[in-house]
Image (cartoon, rainbow, N blue to C red; front, side, top):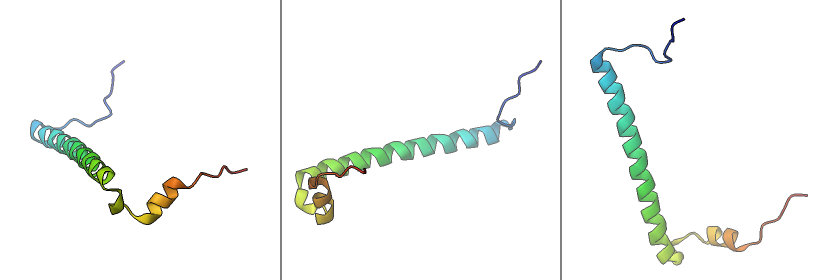
Length: 66
């Protein structure tokens, strides 16, 4: 019995292109995460920059659904 791969067989040029696309998507995700963390740290230092609704929502006690 032979094993079949889920991915179709590509030539080396196509395979390299797909690997590059995956690598760049991963890199963009990492950069976006790092940027979000940096912005969160900056906003934490200046709470007056946050929208008032967000602060009220965080300060209000949460109601539990019955």
